[in-house]
Image 1 (cartoon, rainbow, N blue to C red):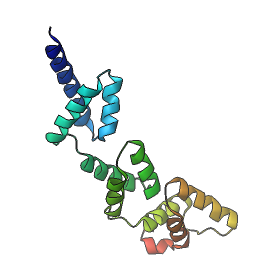
Image 2 (image 1 turned 180 degrees about the horizontal axis):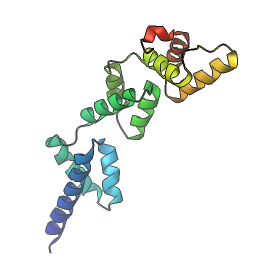
Image 3 (image 1 turned 45 degrees about the vertical axis):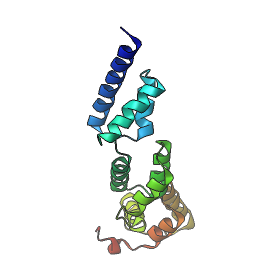
Length: 161
């Protein structure tokens, strides 16, 4: 088998592996490249395969980010946590900012709903309890403004009762 045949075979197997992964869920380009690297494929093979998958629109970073943001919002996570997770996956910061800005979500209300689900209708009556609830929301990725909104929102305003 010649080197050209070996490279074509390697690229074909890498493409099959990548398509199998993409058939299960969306991936960021860097995330998919890491999976291919762990399988032992070389940089040139990986770049060629990923470029071709982007041409075919099997691999689409915009679609991945939009889906990722939507699922994390549905889980009640805040924008800071969503942003951090996408950065870990190698997604461009500008793309992340656009996706979060267009997420059709009021993160203050989302934080208030998360607080209400976790701690009930009663608002915190002590400084310690307020700090505990604020820590919970911060760990979920909400900003200080979102936390303030959540702690000041009456549960009746959320329509969750």
